[in-house]
Figure 1 (tube, rainbow over the protein chains, first blue to last red):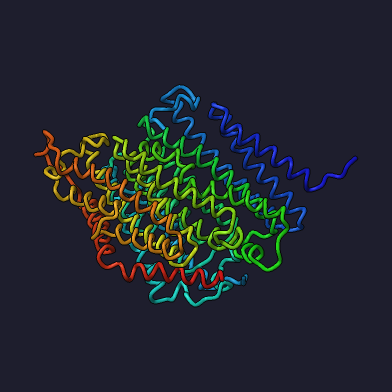
Figure 2: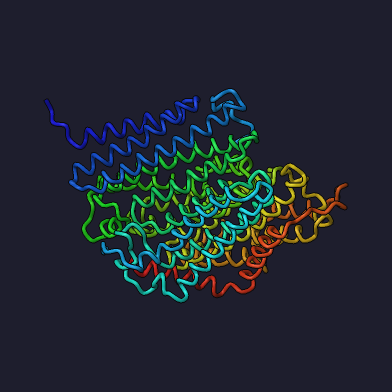
Length: 102
Length: 501
C-alpha cells in the first residue's frame, strides 16, 4: 500500500478544480453551474488544508473556515437570483437568459 | 506584528466601524419612517457617509492616522490582517466619495427608495475598504467577497424588472468563477511559502535565497490565477464579458457605483499583491509582467473599439470604463512610484467624472424611461445645466483640458515614458483619440440634434443637484489645480515603495 503523500492531495484538488471549472464553462443548468462553482471553491479548500498539514502551519486551515462561510453566503445569494429569474422566465437554463446581448 | 490591541488599531479601523454603525442606523430608520418619506433614507446614508469621510480626513490631518513615518511592522495592524498606510486612505476617500454621490443620485429613483438598497451599498463600501487595506490572503478574500456578494444583490435589485435579475445572475456567475480561480491561486501561493501575510510572502519571494525552479512555475500559475480575480474586478479584457450586460441591466445608480468604487478596489488589490512583491519582485523581467502589459494594451484597444458601435448609453459607458481601466493599468505596470501615484490620481478623478456622467443618465432616463443615445437629443435646449455637466464629464473621460481627465492621462503617460515604456504610452495616446470619437458623438446628440420634446425641461431634485455639482466641481478643480491631490497620491505611492524596497 503506497503512502498517501501531499502530491496525492494536490493532484485530487487539481482534478476537482478542473471538473468544477469545466462544469461552469460547459453546463447550462444554473443549479449545476452553482455546484461546479462550489466544487472549485472546495478544491481550493482541499489544497489549503493539504498544504497546511504538510507544512505544519495552521493559517491555511483557518482560511478554509472563512472560505466555507463565504461560500455558503454566496450560494444563498445565487439561489435567490435563480428563484427571481425562474419567476419571470420559468426556466433556469442560462442560455435562455439573454435579454441583453453579451 | 504586535498582538496587543491598541487605540491606534481601533482608530485605523474607525471608518469601517462607523460604516457599520451607519448601516444599522439606515436599517432602523427604514423601519421607523412613513412610507411616503422613504426618499429620506438616501439622505441619511449620504450624510452619514459625509461625516465618515470628514472623520477619515480629520484623523489623518489632526490625528496622524495613518502615520506616514511608520515602519512596515507598525503599519501592519490587527495581527497583520490590515495595513494602514496612505494608500488605504487614498482609496477610502474614493470609496466614501462614491458612496456619498451614489446615495444622492439614488434618492430620486423610486424603486430604490428602500433601506436594504442603501444598506447593501454600505456593506459593499466596507468590503472595498477592507480590500484596499488587506495585507493577508484571508483578509483579501473576505474583503473581496463582502464587496462582491453585496454587489450581486444590488445588480439584481429590481426584481420586477426583466433585465436586472439577469444582470445579477451574470454578475454572480462570472464573479463567483473569477473569485474561485483567484482563491485557488492564493492556495498555491500559500503552498509555496507557508505564509498568508502578503508582506511576509513578499519578503520570502524577493529575498536573497533563490526559490526552486519548479516553485517558479507554480508561482507563475498562481499569478495567472490571481490576475483572473483582479481582472474581473477592474473589468479588463479578457475578463470583461460581464461588464456591458451588468452595466445595462443593473439599476443605474449602482452602475455608477460599480464602475467607480469596484474598479478602484480592484486596482487596490493589484497594488497590495503585485506591487507589494507578493508574487516576486515586480519588474519587467518577470514572466507575468508581459501578461499584464498585454492585458493592458488589449483592454484599452478593445474597450474603445467596441464602444464606438454602442447605441445604449449605459453599454457605451461600460465599454468606455473597460478602456479607462486599461489606461489606469499603464501606470501600474510601470512599477514605479510615479506610475502608481498617477494611477491612483486617475482613479480618484475617474470616480468624480463617471458618477457625474451616470447622474445625468439617471435623471434623463427617469423621464424618458429608456437609456438610448436618442434620449439625449436636444438635451442642451431641454436642460442646459445637465447638458453642461455631461459635457464636462465626457471631456474629462476623453482627456481634454481643462478637466481632470487631461491631467490624469498626462501623468499616466508621463510615468510610462519616464519608465521607458514609450510604446505603451503611444498606444494609450492613440486610444485616447479613438475614444474622443464616441465621447464627442454623445456631445453631438446633446448639442446639435433637435427633438420634439425639447421645451419640456427635466426636473432635478435638490439632492441630485448637490451630488452633480459636487462631482463636477471636483472634475474641474482637479483639472486646473491638481497639485495637492496628485502630490497626495504620489506621496502614498512613494511611502509604499520606500518600505517595499
